[in-house]
Image (cartoon, protein in one colour):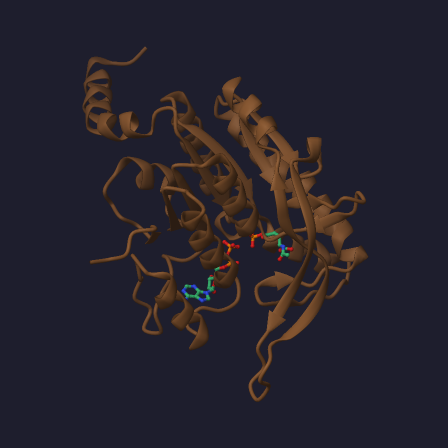
Length: 300
Ligand SMILES: Nc1ncnc2c1ncn2[C@@H]1O[C@H](COP(=O)(O)OP(=O)(O)O)[C@@H](O)[C@H]1O
Ligand SMILES: CC(=O)N[C@@H](CCC(=O)OP(=O)(O)O)C(=O)O
């Protein structure tokens, strides 16, 4: 039982949080949990508690997770070389096996378990379950200095999202389950596709017409060359930052999916520093304004 002091504290906190809780009650928030933001047990536990708290106050969280560093660790142990092009892992058949084992197996079940230990009812899925994420092969185009046309590169079993089975997600959410989705897609022929988790989160948020898309990563937000966090950017400003090399690597799919999501009807997308404890709650329940916010509104 709570002490009088603790009850008074709960009352104070809930009164402050009430407008935010009311604003998001019954709404869907898609949270992409990046592999880099899973760096300690403490952080993972704080993430799991935040998700359960959201659900308890009537918000519907849908989690999409990554696991790039965890895939990298196992590939290294198995002596399999790995390379990234435009922020995407080149994925041959051997690599795909490892990706599927790590994402659909250890990482997915770890998050599911932590949420359930924190009192939630999480259910783990990959895109193969009930055809949750139908995918096709992604062709990456790369601009090489000195060449007029970008070259199209085949990077193996890397996919892009063709469709999302929202019937399955909605059925789970309305029964109070918290879906935890691993970014593995399935082709029309049953082939597995490795999909960047940011891209899956963006498409899931779009398909669900989510109120918010949160991308938890290991950096304070999108930064300029001096390390200042940028926010409220337009599409053309982002394009210019990609062109001049300010945005590269893993930030490329992240920013592209955030822009696509808001253009596709998601209320807002935010890139958040997942190394901060309670990053999810801070973003939903405060005006702390952490990270980079992307909306469809043009700044004045
Ligand atoms: N302009 C930029 N601002 C911030 N980070 C950037 C930028 N351009 C590239 N990055 C890189 O993108 C990384 C985030 O992407 P990634 O490592 O794929 O994260 P996650 O695993 O969370 O998806 C950052 O750690 C940083 O190294
Ligand atoms: C095609 C591609 O790059 N897939 C990613 C999938 C995992 C992921 O996106 O994890 P993070 O969010 O932790 O980076 C990979 O193989 O690493």
